Length: 60
Picture 1 (cartoon, one colour):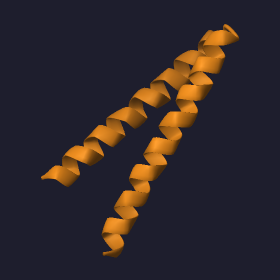
Picture 2 (tube, helix red, strand yellow; picture 1 turned 135 degrees about the vertical axis):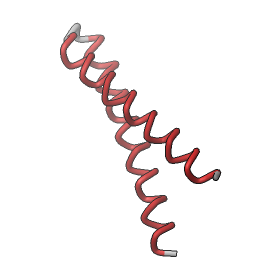
Picture 3 (cartoon, one colour; picture 1 turned 120 degrees about the horizontal axis):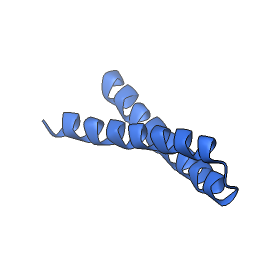
Picture 4 (spheres, one colour; picture 1 turned 60 degrees about the vertical axis):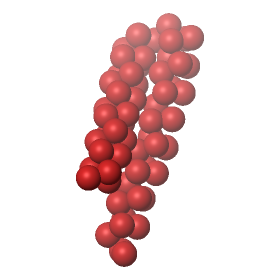
């Protein structure tokens, strides 16, 4: 039970990080800050990958 709760907490953390990094990505694009936009795009992509990986691991 505790392991399942911890696992679900990780999913929520992945989602929160993805949303925040996507927001910073959009803001960096608007401000024409390419370095920050690239970095936040990479972070967003990694978090989306983590969410997909977590979902696949739970469906098995």
